Image (tube, rainbow, N blue to C red; front, side):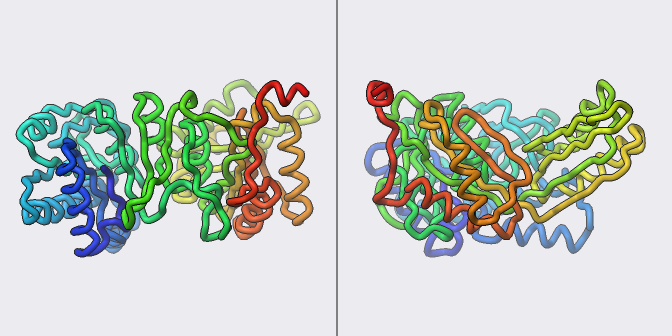
Length: 415
């Protein structure tokens, strides 16, 4: 059971989470719960760091940021003990979560869950601080924003849990952000592949790496509300989804930045040097476009997107490479957005891309960059046009509660 920051934001919500954990235990389940930092605690800790330094040391940031989840776990353990059950709170390192050495964005390498199993055998409820672990060099590390989801899925895999329940402030995964599209439909079941594309396209219900981990280890996820007992959305293997919608959801992000390198030499290895520098700086690159020169001797242009939070680090990493390669200009546009349509049914239906482009063109929304996969089409657009793009695409593909278009059976497609 994983409880997000809004689910433990104050004393009453934390006690509600404790009661829910106890109820699961009293139903005869062994329970491991992962807690996020309370409310805006992580943002407040980042603010404290910025008061000290404009460029805080990543190792010390991890030491600082890991405290928020520890507070939540200790307080929740106190509440559970008062309810008559024995709980034990553990840090990520005490729980056996081993990561690589990438501070602030570490990846889980192993989960050595012996201490958790021992506690469960003793009848204890185990509370684990999310978002953190210990590196192979014995430093505290954190897993990046939303990392508590990954903690929960990794622990579920390690202890062979029946299900990993992700409790949040929404009732499940929706066909679009309900704050933008009021008639967005709650999805009962989503495949791992669809959820991966949604998470990578900006849907914030589940962290991308948690879904990757769940798919790789066969962990069944139930995303549900902290505030009622209704069934949420199950994220499962594709073999468990009975029928595929043509389009499942419209996802979006307004946290994109675009970098364009003008005057990239047309020579082997230039692109490799550019993106190696970004990888070394731990910057995640999303879409990439390279315009090849039309005339001999002309130089190419390379454009790509990164998360806005990575923009400063990306620019710093590119400066020495630009000097080495003789790149003329590094142009940065920080206010970009992305809108994506996702659906496993796209695999066997032509014309989806044409409809996306037509709908956006009718709204005079200019597409800056495009990327595709077998079940996704993503368009980079101006950030201030994202809400309009989400609404018109959601309407055009009839994704509202009464308008879902299912993929026809193979035989029906042939007719």
